[in-house]
Image (cartoon, rainbow, N blue to C red; front, side, top):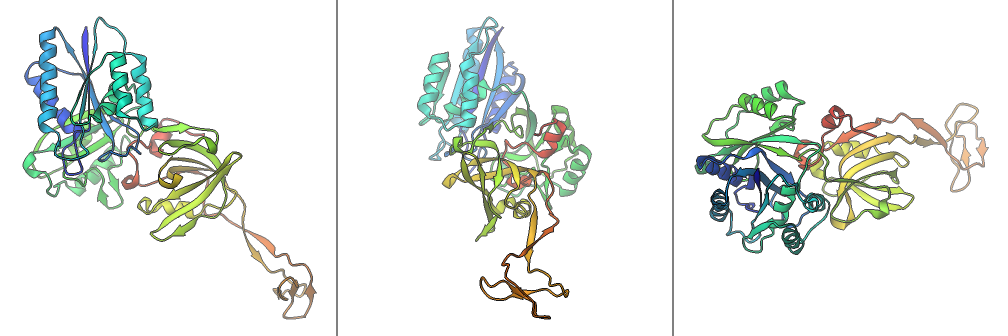
Length: 427
């Protein structure tokens, strides 16, 4: 069997379009010519710290069988023509890339492509690196403008997902782009009640989390564990506008595929995401804007950790941390070499206490007798030369376990606690 792997990336902009929508259009065009893709197309989220990403730094791939070179030519032409005509070429930082990788006679994919996928999720790669790999493994690539999308296209082709989720994306008709999305809140509440936890991140407090807030073609997207459950959920959602159709993607969203396990703080680098265990080195501090910071330490060093204002109530958990608590943090190192927390596991709690003046033998609380002069009882006049206050243990409000940011602040790749429980993941 001859199989053509197709990778597409960087076709959109903050002002509109969506690479998944272009893929949806391409798949429908291919079907009209008698070509059907194998399985589900893949939506692969890459390094969340990529500097030129538009939104979620996602690339798309799919594979399609073909019989002869004439069919192969037709397939490629449909794809190239559609990317060329539908991409947001007018936007400065939109630089599409399309990659074709042919496998004939049941050969296996080059392992260098699979390794490249992890590099694109863990690191920041260059266009030069991507082009060299494409040439080395025999990929045909097409660049538009500087072709930065070649990086994501190669990574999407090489992806093999041990853990995976699915997303059903519903697309609006073009005349509605940029207008308010007409999706029934009550129907989403009902859908969530019926399908959770097999679908997730449908709601965030009192608003719908499945609808984007950009002028892109997506009406809404439902994420879940299987293709069947997201399609079932879609049928429960009520909307009041015309749609062009929907497409289900197999994806690495909510799998923690971006998280690298590391043993020492000193080995962490900027623009990468980690799971690291350490000891809280101070009571968290609040700065203007509602952000909370604290230092985490291990035997190799110290790193500043942050829970920013968009994480909302998650900050209430961070506020309760105390010096000596042992925690495992999942997150990424962004600007100023600060570890942005995605979720935290509180492993053990240090003793918390308040410092009180001692009690006199007569039963009254003593007062300070002056700096470095000990204590004096205001009732009987007894003096103590000892300057030490008494530690009174207090019950910790924080409990051990996992805590996570809300859906509105969650990265596409971050695995929710409910998925970790269902997959029996933990320390």
